[in-house]
Image (cartoon, rainbow, N blue to C red; front, side, top):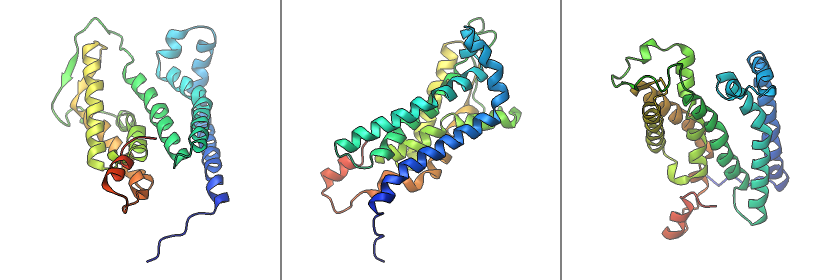
Length: 237
């Protein structure tokens, strides 16, 4: 079978614009769906109640939406700079980098929000697999799956060295363990549970499977010498 012909130049140039438009439409749709909880916290943020603005789930959601235009701008500036210096896959790499940060930090922020007795009680640990999972509602399960989903989706797109489901699963588990340890050490009145680690890592792996077609290994030229292939498989650029 002959290799597919490359896309014409106008189609290649139009793709980033289409992706940006789709991202904006998706964000607008999500904002409309969540408009009530976001509008509830908006007066608190505009009147200086920073503890409620930055210390609640709704507040974190509002700040995340407010930061979306800046994330889009960061992708555009980074990609334009890369294209100017001749870096391949400039848009893909820039989108992956910003996507990892923008899609992960808000969830990490939420996991670090203290409970009502933070600092007054010792950390609690649950090491029996699936015991806590049986008591979680659907929202908790979905939330745990999404915490590291952006990392799992974009990391193998950005770094060919991570383009493997077992590696992403291990990366997700390692990051989740760090989160649970931080919750315990900081005495945030949260339960450090092995089920959280399992769900976080699973979410990262599922997201990685969803982005499989965009992994950097797909475009790697196998006829290059081994040292060049080794550099192509890393996270440089």
